[in-house]
Structure formats: C-alpha cells, structure tokens
Image (cartoon, rainbow, N blue to C red):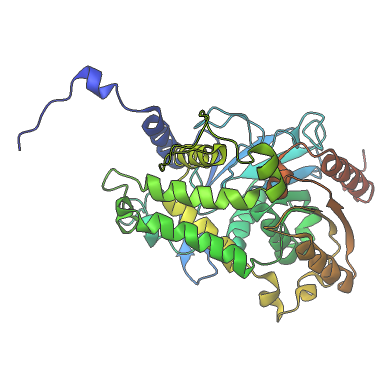
Length: 407
C-alpha cells in the first residue's frame, strides 16, 4: 500500500488526550522537576535480589532548609500521585494534589518546614520506572524492569535524602500507599526519622485489596494494545484497559454514602433511560470520565508495578510475623489517622498498628475521624485531620533536640 501524505489539517486533529499522553511520556523521561541521578557505581539493590543502576529520582522541594537541617519533612505520595504535591502538574496543568495539606500556613507549613516529595520508584513522572530507557537495550524497560516493592521505594527515597545532605527527617507524612512508605521508613530507618504521620493506610494489603488490584491489572493486560507490555514500541497504549482499571479502583476510594449523596440514581443529561448501554446514570458518566482522564497522565505498566508493590507489602512478615518487632526500641513519634467510612483501609487496620506500637512501647497518637467521604477523605478538606496534624507536628517540634545551639 502506498504511503498517503498527511495534510496539516489532519495532523492538527491530534486529540487533546493524545497530546497530554505525549507530554506525560516526555515528563517521564525528562521531567520538569528536580532530578537526582545515582550512577552505575551506586546501584540500588532491590528486594527481589536484582540491582538497578543507574537510577533517577525526580523530586520537588518547598520552603527552606534551616541551618541545622532539622526541619525537613518528606511527603510520600499514594498510588497514582507524584512529586508535585503543592505545585502545578506539568502534564495536566492542575494544582498540586495535596495543596490542602502542604503550603504556606497549611498543616505542613512551608513557611516553617522544608518539604520534599519524590516520585516513587516504578512511577511514571521522572523517577526510574517502566517508561524509562533501559541503557542496555536503548528501549523502554517496560515489563523487563524488576518488580518493585514498598521497601525499594523507600530505599530510593533514603538515597535521595542522603544526597540532599539531610541526616534525619523531622517528619514523614503520607496517606494510602504513602502511609505504607511511612511505616517502612519507621521500620527500616528509625534513627533517621523523628516523627511520622500515617493516614488511611495499613501495615499490609488485605486479600480484598489485592483482589481489586488484580482486576485492574487483568483489565490492562487483556487490552489488545498492551502487547505484552511493549506498547510504546508499537506507538500505542492500552487506554481502554487502563481506564477500566481506574474506574474499578475509583469505586474503592469512595464510600457508599458519598456515592449515594453525590449521584444517587440520577440520570445523565436525560429524562429517562435509553434502554441501551450508553451512560444513562450520572455515576456511569463520572466513572468513564475518571477512567479516560487517568490514561492521559499515567502509564499502564507503572500501574501494574505500583499496584503490585502495594500487594506485596506486609511489614510484619519481615519481622517473624510480629508487627511490634518492626518498631521495637524506636524513638520515633507516631500519629495515625483513619476515617469511619474508609472500607479500603478500615479503622481496624490502624488499630492493629496502634496495638503493635503500644507493645513496642512507642509514642503513638491515634484518631478516627468521622467522615462520609471514604478513603479519599485524606485528600480532601477535613478540618479534624488538619487540626490533628498541626497539633502533632507542633508537639513533635517541642521534643526535637536541635544540634544548632544558636536557636
């Protein structure tokens, strides 16, 4: 078949979604944020036994590091988050994903603290992940990248913190998968963490959570455009599969109460059902929108890797099956927050961690916050959550032993 030239007008018909996907790919390989490169002489030994080098860690910082470097707070992002916690996302153009929590005068106050947030290992916004170029092949790692765990993510973050010249973090704050990283930090590097805040998370992934993730992964891998993970070489993407995965996951982030109050059985732009399979209901339209906008900014293989990291997480397993052993002798101060309608990480998950911390004689505060917003409450305006974190960080400051005697 002869090659048919494409006119300028046809070339300009590239959809907004495709343009965003191109921007996302560029940001994955050449991010706008800060990047620290650890070369071949400084490999990261992964939990699976493989070594990874070189690696890149993309990160953003906010505020100013004080003279004794005692005011640094690390923010750990959730499953599909990134380093742009309080600044504009270069792919979507939207504000940072946690501007309610981080910023001037916010609970994590950038006027007082030096805030760091990095894209996780295995992610797709600048840190080494499936989209990154494998130096041995000159093509994307895709699924040849070794499987990543939460411990590996934290190890990469620890390398970054060391490279930034910070010996000990004042605090680490994270929700959902970010909360898993918080716990891993406290267990792996207790002498490098003064305090931690874990929100809407757990010390392991339950079988129910693994099940939802497996549905999402299968949706991605069943898409004909996945090509065994090598879709970038084919200049395609498993958009439909990834969109379905996001739709299924998004249901778990909301409570039954919030879904009912927000959507009920309301119809979408119509007075009666169509007796067909278009989006008759508002909730259907909402989920489809969530799915399609997600594929514009997130890589399908990264979704496989990061969900697998959450599924493999079981902190007690690393300590002879006893979670308390992970924190024995720790001097780190802990704050745990759960929400009444979070069925992804219900309050019982947090309480089990509190019991383990009590057994380890650790300093721990815990609050269950009444909210009808489900798991996503940690990302939203929740005054009780804000007040709890403000109070905890102020209390932790009072117990901080500074090395700078001029203060």
